Image (cartoon, rainbow, N blue to C red; front, side, top):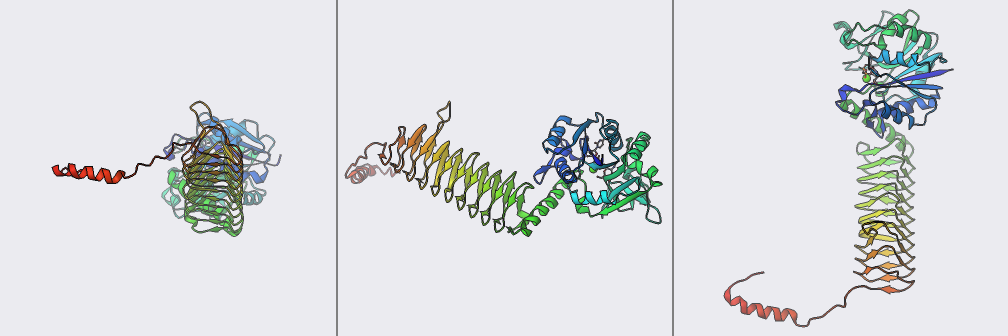
Length: 467
Ligand code: UD1
Ligand code: CA
């Protein structure tokens, strides 16, 4: 077997001060674990052994959801250190066919496929190759101790380091390539005689140094791990800028990158404009020339070319070419706006199709409805889709005109070219081309105001002056 990997993901992440396993915390649209696995995916490793422990089932499920080939899981029931975790992985036998093994920390979301490729390429002849970085503040991390000629001698953990060693600013990123046999041999000999009483993976470096340990020094923006929620947020901003950078270079206008949140699985075509406060989550697709924002949250939603969405929320919806959404609209799952359709101000839609050129401009609820083309739905129209037991469908034909404040009590069908009068409660189907009005006749009471005022005038003698 060529290359294989171990992902260390059994720890709780105590410094996160959270019940959720550290590697399951989301950042910039993916969990920490998923970022690491996605960095490994293009390497097409034959085997990736994920070491699970704390919240093992959930961690395992999250890894499996990636669909990456060659995943295996081993359980480290007691977290006795990174060296112990690697040992459990090797002893599982899952890596017996591997010549070299890449070791990845589960908490390194900034790692890229490119730098992992460079690390594998740099591993030639020696027993191990380390990925290191230089930090202005290396506090808490393992320091790289080199000899006078720059050769790596060992890694010393902060708590075990001398004052002089703590002054070293080059640190381990917990990312390594090892010759499997050499790693297995040294892991079997690991002790726990250190400040934390753990089996340190870092301790295998010293005995391997004689056989040659190389190091690739990379930038902190790639290498920094995440040990607390402040570092998580910082990693998030780096990951988001990478995503936005790629979009901008591909021709997308991002008016304010610091206020734009785009997930890693979103695609945006050239000449689209993303305005501040835009959040694109899941598998959103934004078409050429579309405008999204300000202040939108779209989840798994498609916005086709030239459409415009502002101050809106849309989940699992599809907004056709040139369609208009917002300001202040909510499109819930299963909403489809065909070309040029509109969901305007204070409009909520769910599981409905709005035909080409049809407009729902103000203060309406459209649920479980199919609306034809060139329909006008007046302000404050409601599809009364729920009778307290089940949901029912409303069907509106092409070119129909729904008067303002119509209650369309489903199941109901409004025919092509039909009209409903404002304020009507429509409970029966309306045939094609017909008008349906449902309201009481308007009454006129002539001279009403005059009479009322003169009555008040008499009462006014007692100086009541009420309103
Ligand atoms: C580790 C390194 C340190 C390096 C730093 C980089 C050791 C002893 N220290 O320290 O040199 O600078 O990473 O971020 O290796 N894990 C297990 N089982 C365990 C313990 C840990 O699976 O028993 C996993 C954790 O879930 C985590 C990873 O290993 O994903 C690293 O563990 P962590 O406790 O974060 O190590 P650091 O203290 O950061
Ligand atoms: Ca760490």
